[in-house]
Length: 225
Image 1 (tube, one colour):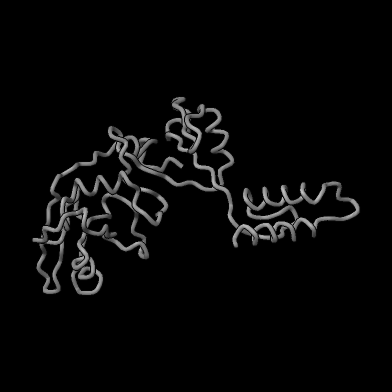
Image 2 (cartoon, helix red, strand yellow):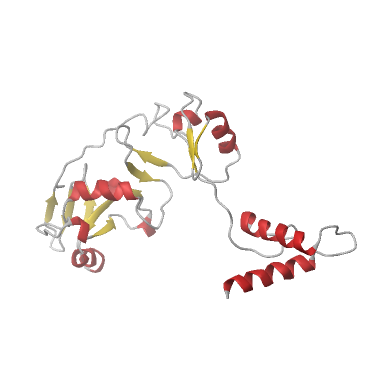
């Protein structure tokens, strides 16, 4: 089974490290090899490859910029102080920017597209859309699919202004026929039929997302990082 296979692999790598200058016992080598594989995906001499550990730290942008000292959050642990958060941020190899509503904290966009829409962004879209957003369709949003208005393969982002609910039939219609879809503003969609006629659909609950310091923390139109 998987456990036996993992033990056998760890043992094989551990034995390959044994030699006249190696002072660790086989059990100690097994322990070190297992730790290396789990935490870094490789062993000291490059043998093996696998899962790489990831640490998730959520840092408010103003804390990162040194404007204030609001605590960050270490996933699985809890709050950490601003100084520790900045130190961890200084060694981070990658970033995912998450834009949240300044009042509610709802996720509005994610800079790197995950495979799944974040739960609070999904709830935001359900409240905003109410139903499938094709003109005249009344299928509830909770029974519909979330569509990227601009497909991800063309650079479409995981953002409230690039997502909307479409039922299965109208999702297929968008991707397999000549219908075109764009988001105008504040959840208003514009459908263009193959004939050239344009149909606008309004959200069930209009939610205006105000431009805020979170969109432009530097106040000059430049990104924070």
